[in-house]
Image 1 (cartoon, helix red, strand yellow):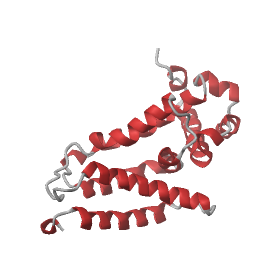
Image 2 (cartoon, rainbow, N blue to C red):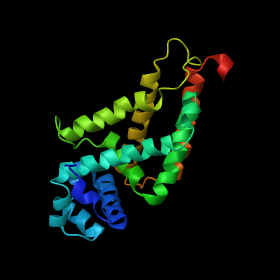
Image 3 (cartoon, rainbow, N blue to C red):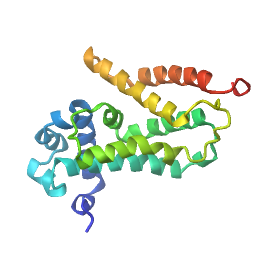
Image 4 (cartoon, rainbow, N blue to C red):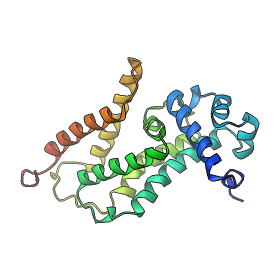
Length: 208
């Protein structure tokens, strides 16, 4: 039996409320800081019912992680992304795909970027294993058709990808430190600057 079968039997509208409540509260408070009763209230159900659908907090969190990843994979499958061979063009494509997703899931950005920054996930847990796998193996999933010829020979492309993730983490942590909300448009604007800088550093002159 699918671990989430009871949840998946719910009407789509009810599923959406529970998913968005999780994205919102995990994204805002992190794994350790979130109160599952608050999530349940936000979703319009009892805490007991939440744990009827998901056996515990970690199971619920893992479901949201998988759901988040699958949304991007499905978005890519519905388009011609496999025809994109430029590393930075694919990053642009992925960013725009995510913008479409957040129309239906407005808190998915907070949740997904917090996967990088959240240090409260228990070391050795299934959650940590899954998050690390998503973050550090996602390169092989999304960039398998990229032509790496434009990169200078000394550049490790996977490390560049990881550095861009770390920049996102630093951005998030700084906003939290000064208690300033993360505005998606501002984040994307800054990310575009980082991308342009990395491209200038990483690409051979004839490809700029």
